[in-house]
Length: 294
Image (cartoon, rainbow, N blue to C red; front, side, top):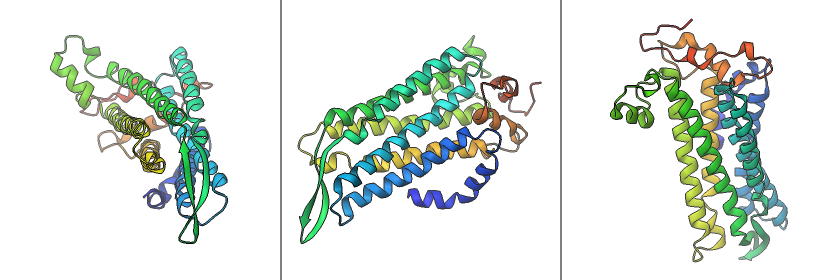
């Protein structure tokens, strides 16, 4: 699935490279996330299917690539928050520290398996994970959930605050609820970011909860306790990169808001050293009739 996703978007990824000449950091993070996740998926599959004696090395490579993939995916989340909160450096600083904490949690992934040894099955050696350190496996899942929850709430709050609901003053409870859950009444650009964040957060929530539950069921064999991790990492990386790619290339806008394509540059290429080049988020919140704020 992940290989197919990469192959089907090679044209868009080439265009991303062409757009990365001025401020390459977000695009570099994007490609590191893509390649590390691809390496993780392939090496994880090989670690349980390849006929090899180097099981420990292969397993360590797989888990290390998983840690890099998750760290860069969450960094894409942070870059989105930084673009939205560029005028509030204390918030950006707090969330950068939170991201570093998440990286520290994710760095424990290579320490999950105590040992991986070759096991002879019908005359063929396959790698088998002997046991799992439950705490080392739970901490990355919980750390990612805490980080993504905080980022999702912060981004959603800023988008809703700048929405046409006028900070919900005088709005009915039904209006506030529909806006918070469905993104109703939000401008096109804000709605795209809001719903994208909802989808990514939902996947993180489901992945983290399922991982922790499976880890703490002793009746499940060791190998099967982490069987859901590779597809979850692949899906999360694929969706996070899709959101980045579509925003960067301006593919999430309809005919009424296509002229706002420059806003995409604000979202992903804002640079704190050049605040004058950033576009305020309020400029992205256009009404449905296509009027511009100047």
